Image (cartoon, rainbow, N blue to C red; front, side):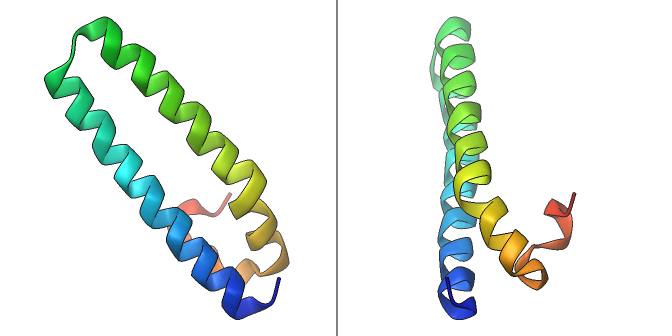
Length: 72
């Protein structure tokens, strides 16, 4: 993937991850504890997949695109 495309994809995925984080708070505040825990675990799985399948390969190819807070 060329660098500009990788940068755009990274930004899209990070934005989506932020929205997913916000959804966890919403579910926590509006659902039962059991529903919240199940939802949170599902979102963690999705975010893990986004990291492994999309972001990690991008940052491996273009390390300068990786945000400071995400660097391993």
